[in-house]
Structure formats: C-alpha cells, structure tokens
Length: 292
Ligand SMILES: [Fe+2]
Picture 1 (cartoon, rainbow, N blue to C red):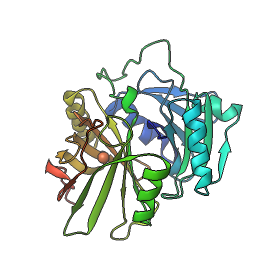
Picture 2 (picture 1 turned 45 degrees about the vertical axis):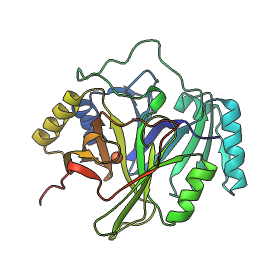
Picture 3 (picture 1 turned 45 degrees about the horizontal axis):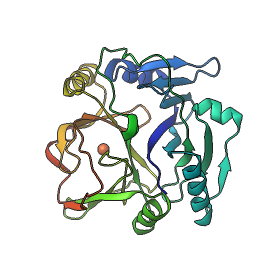
Picture 4 (picture 1 turned 180 degrees about the horizontal axis):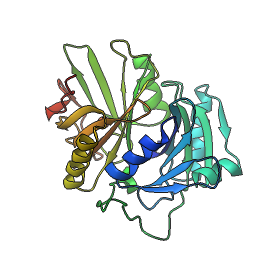
C-alpha cells in the first residue's frame, strides 16, 4: 500500500497577519476563520480546507497530513507504521471534524520528526473555490496539495522508511554544489514529487522543514504573485526559475514562520513506466538566491 497524496498541512504561527497577507494577496486563497482561538483555515480547491494556521507564541509545523485512498489502505498503512515501531494514535471526533476527514491517525514521522497524520475521506464542498485574488486556482485533485521537503538525519534509513513503509516511489536524485547538497524526490501519484528529503548541510539541523510547494494552474498567476512579493518586499528564498527534474517554473518566498513556500506551475507528471533519473543541478535557469 502507499499514501496517495499530500493532503493537508497546519502550522503554528507567531505572525498571523504576515501569513494571512501572503495567503490572500500573493496566493489568492480563501481565508476561513474558525469560531474560536483565532485559527484560520485556508481553502484553495474543492476541499473544505487544506491549510490551517494556529496562532502561537512559537513557529513550528503543527502537522503534515498524508492521504490514503480508502479505509482498507489506511488500516494497512497504520499496521505498517506500527510494524516499523511507530506509535500511532487514532484521532477522535474532534480531530476528524477539525481536519474534515472521515478517519485519521496521528504519529510522529520517525524519519523527519514531523508531527504527521494519515487519513482518508476528505470533505468536499458543494460550492466551487473562488480565488480571492482572481487567480485561476491550484492544481491539486488527484495530484494532492503539492509537495514538502524535509532535512533528515539518517538519509539511508529515511529512504527505506518512505519507500518501504509509506510506499513512495523514487522519482530522481540531484547531487550538486560538488556533492555538498543532495536530494531524493518521491512520487505517490502523477505529481513528479510529493516528498523530497535532503541530508542537512551547513548549520541546518536534521528535522528542519525546508519548504511547501503549491502548484498554480497558470504561469501568469505565478508571475503576478512574484510581482506582489517583490512590491511588498516579502523575503525571497529563491527567485523565479525552472527546475531540472520536475520542470516546474516557480519562486520561493520565506514564510513568516521561517520555512520556504514554493509557488509554481507546469510541473512534470510521472507514470507507471517512469525511470529513475539523476541530475547534477536543481535548476535549468534562475532560482537565484537574493543578494544581501
Ligand atoms: Fe520544491
């Protein structure tokens, strides 16, 4: 069995205003305020929400949610996680209602240390998503929310966990900067990758969340979003560019929580006959780090 997509994410956030400005003015998502606690759910497709922001006095990843196709797949995944030695707890009514899913289990991902969940049966909304910014929407559906990238301490064991326990399939590897930087990319649906992992370099600690990627339906939306980011002086992690492996045209902003948010379009799709590839650079062009 295998996870079938990145389902949702939630973040504990100090600077809510900064996040909400990015979510509305840069990405054109729909902001849904809960009745209590200042929590904001974020809608960006037909799901009730795919992102949640929890006001907090420190920034951290609250959860990364992985989708399973149905109840049998979910139960098999929970059994596989427990066989690997992971403590898995079933979410009750409150968590199911919060995530708007049919069934959910929580665990700490042993490879990355990320608070994580597996679930099935997300609630879809009757009314269509309408972008607050007039954008053409996000490419999600069977491709999932997008992708996440983690820095992991034990690269080889993490590869084993994600492929043999969670069922990801390898898309490709990139090794660059004379071997200092190394990344492995994994798919679980036609999106080129829903997950990538890297051993840390420099002073980055293992267990660091590097970035979340969201895919737009339109290059124009990505270009306009980049204009807004530059105009508003939102910190940029990497400027506009195109990746070698997934062929996405994207830029990366730095969220107010310190990790990256990649916004791109025209990502590559993979099929059953995919052959694992390798590359010696992550970008065909661009993706330059801003000068100080
Ligand atoms: Fe990415």
